[in-house]
Image (tube, rainbow, N blue to C red; front, side):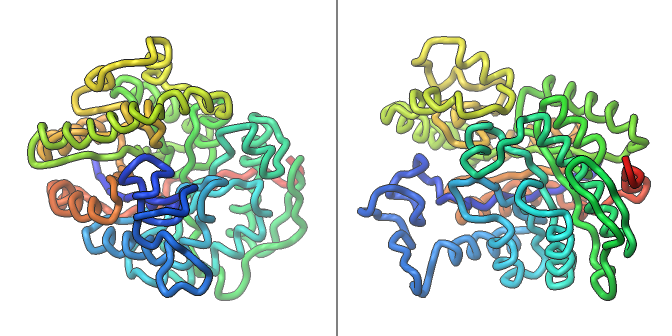
Length: 398
């Protein structure tokens, strides 16, 4: 089975320390008394936080990562804009831009993507998301309920693919209609971005089964991953799709020895406990509508104060970041050899795309590039759409 590695860019500030800590690089914190680099951003400064993201992107490219994921959150920089800015600063790095169908009309998304692809050499990948919190959705003006957002997303991708592959596309749906539009001229040379999506609800799984090239997951116990992959594959077969693939987002704390890696993880954990981060996470749990993962449910069902070692849900798989509020929540913690072994174990389950990042992102891009990625040189393949999965579209008038 092939394997590929992307990283993530911190669009809401660096996380060498807890989120919001003024020692972090960037200006994404509340304190004006920052000690972090590029912390005093003012319009017109010669070096801004976006420049720092450019440094991380170039470091990722230098160290052999195939791409970078831009996480979309109302409390961070806008991903598609950052992708566009950084694409011209790198040569081969792909950019995964997360966005919601609520944010764009299908035609605007198609036109923007085609222009981006032509300018970057087809280095854009889409991560179609539909919001993890009803409360946050309403804050940004979207009052659709959870299931309706996924119904809208299915139509959105139906129309996107119709516009992309036809100059005279017609469609009559509940959310979108089209009468004769489509890409024309040189824009037709652009490749439709690969489609990623996530979400473990039934509507999310159905959307992935119908339209996704890659279904992305947060890390869980291998048994949970195995079951979820089997379910998505079975759903995809209903639409005649046998080539859907799978990705995993997980942080990494790795060092020469287990002891050194555990020491760094415990630094985060102890600081989070000391500052009451776990209580803050629990207080905001109601803002989220995403499924509670099995390990999260177990952790919340026990006493508030738990020791560091209790958060290992599997060898080298540590849930302490979830406890203290650093997403995506799990990290591979261990020696270089053991982290490589865990990656291979997840790969054997069917995970072909790994989003790996450490803190601070700049330095850890080099660590991962020097000590983890070289073990997989002979197995890596650039991401490509598998031709056997033809675009699935509804007939006009559906």
